[in-house]
Image (tube, rainbow, N blue to C red; front, top):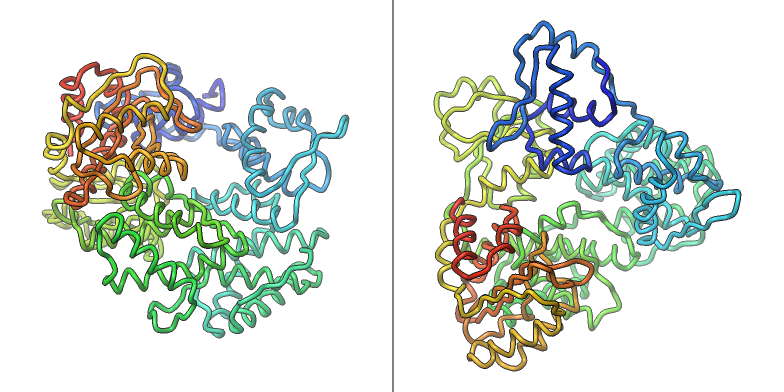
Length: 637
């Protein structure tokens, strides 16, 4: 059987491996749900003669139903394999374009790429918007010359940083496409460099995480390619780097020099020093760390949270040590403007919104006294530490720590990686045991709350989430629905939401006018003082309070309210919110006397987001309608 187009082949491959809802399929294929339904109909017409159909199972998604195994087996044998050298999705084209521009010494014509990839030039012009935006983050620009095409301009440091960060992000999503890495480096270099690092770093007492080691291997591979092609780094010197790190970097540079076949300059070695220092794992014992800046920032953050939000984490020695070890290397990164991608940033904002606001406010306040600019990615890592500390001391919003059974037949390393992903994504999860498929099937009953498995297994009276070795966002969301179970949200909804603080705005209104009207009403009613409005405006100026999916959570810096209340605003036509549009606005006024319940209030909004409730909530016209829809959402968990 021949598929009429590449997208049908991709859809067929996706649904062969797992059951997926149409929303997830639409996201992966970069199309609408309507297109997905049309493609499923087209696929079923083709599959009819092979004794198979894709059927929609309510609550789980499309799954393959095989009526005639013999005819279907013949289809599997003849199914075409996707062509790796031609990008088919918008995201793939953007990645391929970035690699081409970052590695080419000559100008590139979009017409040539359009012919090579069988797309129109207009399609590539649209893709170039994302390409330019990505390059701009690294101060890289594209200049167009008539009849020659486009050429990249920028520093060698920026080119390598952009290239390595891109490869790192792609490697986190699974194995690198051969065409991508072949255009950037020799596939054998990272493997050889991994052996060098594992021998050199322990000898010089330099410890990095597994992720840090993989990143340095990618950077080393990129550096080898660039140096061998005649693009060395300009003058650069590393300051305030420990001697043991310098010694380790010298040996690694010698190994890279042999792989490149050209000498490595002192600037190359210095930049390698910085990369090692930026990813070094410090001793957990705070006694061994004496950097004044690091200690000052840790104390400042914890004191700010205690003073402004009433959460006392000053005596948490573990949190203090964890923050100190992270901030020491973070200062190195921000000093040299080394960007470490944080793939969990959006999830951190959504699952730790209270900790995010506290940490952002503290770092922004500290930023007034320092020349360093701390990015959202770095703040996200700090939020994880603060969030875990809050849960350790103020365990509000969760009934119990969920116990999970992990079934993995892919080996010890893969099991450890999945455990790390789960602990990073859901720190409250307790992995009770890790079993092989055979050991699991021999169990008669399962005592844990639910099961996470990398292979298909039989259900034994407990929910099962089947995941890939590198879990997708959808699979992590399915785990989240089982992890974040709580019964306090309906109570919080009744306590802090009321009809007197509910409004539907049909006409046009700007953000500042909205803040002024709502804060004035709350002040007249005695919920807040005059300073509350100024603080709400100041908080919005730091970083947008958009939570996602059209939901915004404006609030003050700190707990400035006299009494806690949530003002709900429904804006069907939308209100401009930075670069986005808000359709549901929850103005939070939280008092210090009720601060312990604040996290549970935030959990309500996270629930709305997970339930994708924006469309239903924004369609409500009265508080009773809103509360009915909201209660349905929070009661499912």
